[in-house]
Amino acid sequence: MGAKPISFLFKVFGVVQNVGFRAWAQRTAVKLRLFGWVKNDAKNKRMVEGAVEGYIRANVQLMIKLLCSSGSRRSKITRCEISYYETEELKYSSFDILE
Image (cartoon, rainbow, N blue to C red; front, side, top):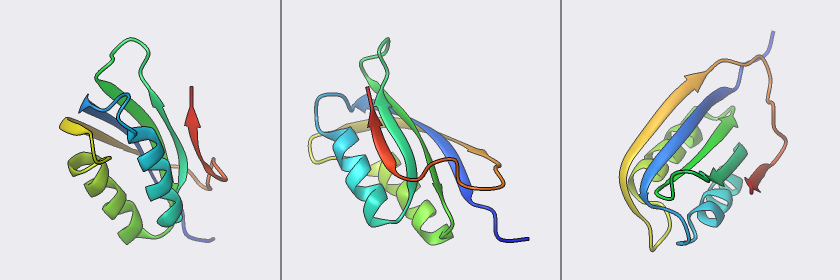
């Protein structure tokens, strides 16, 4: 049996909508060879959420660090929630911005 991907859901709070956060998250995930999605929360204008999966532990850990501390140039992160989940194989084949 092969290695299982490392997978997590995230919610990032603060000034994260209309500041390029989703595009930044997508570019960063692609560079780190990670898969998943990101979207604005329609009800909470100060939150984005998403899912990330990948096999390279260091890249997953770096994505968490970047999501929770830096974000896009104009974002201001006040809080970050990470929830790991288990999966036998990747659910996603790209990293997408969802509407």
